[in-house]
Image (cartoon, rainbow, N blue to C red; front, side):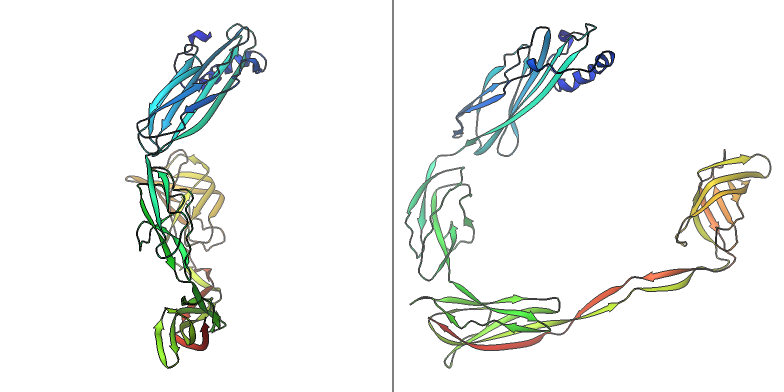
Length: 448
């Protein structure tokens, strides 16, 4: 078989030729690689790397097809595809050697915003002395390369509203379809900056990796500085943290909250704050309180539950698992067997196995002899032996097909005495929770 007889324009040629050459290798010595015929480079060039919708992208594929040495033949295929940002293949090409040149240029019009991916693969096979009766020298290679280009929209302006604070950067030019990039960080006395949102009191944040959909205004989101009184499980009760002084600065405020910590024994359900300034009640049973400068009496009231754990150890009991005279099913089969024809018909089974959920293990017989009698549509096979180590009683099998020593069916065992066994109840742990309990602590707090 010569190179020109290989079907043209087929994919996966390296694998196909590998199979075809096995017979040639078997007749000669081990194959050797023809390194002089290997491709020396594989490149994909994209121009430009960033475009707007509707623009044309030029892609240059250079397979650098190998130049075979004297007496060496080569065949190759190059495949290229472009996937849009959603992962759909929107364009593809295929080139071959010999026939096409190793360097090809293709154009593509991009429409969707986002990142496009170009994947290029080269499948090259070279061989020498194939079909000449001499040793065949064969080499195959598979190469793959991936590159990307971005499709972006028009330039738009984004303004930054500090929303009560200050920001040095008033606006920024960004491209639709690309990320916002670095965003400024505003400042506001007595507040903590949370991030930028698209609405004045919005909850959806914009970050540097968020993709721009349109121009507009971004608003700073602020939150008062927050301090916590901890309420945590301690033994079978709860303990309270201490907050004596909070510095916020003149005219500023702080948010006071509770932070709960459970344990395996104590579930801290909730904690509320009651705050007084002098004789005036500022807040009563609140989850959070906003406080300005001043001296306060803060009472934290917690609701909690205590666990009661009961462990029951494993227990093993002896019980009757099968009563005398009570027939129960067994699934039976054999490894191999022999038969003696006549009436009655005898079967000798070797490696005979029976199992039942009544017993703790399968029963294995090295060799037993059974009698079979044909009744209407099936054989009744009676072995008249007890499972090893168990009371006598015999096993009776129902089998619709008994030939050449074959039997697989349901067995019935009737013990002549009770069969006892052990039943183990695993250890258990149960947890019950008390009714809700209450605890509180009052402390003085100075905000300045």
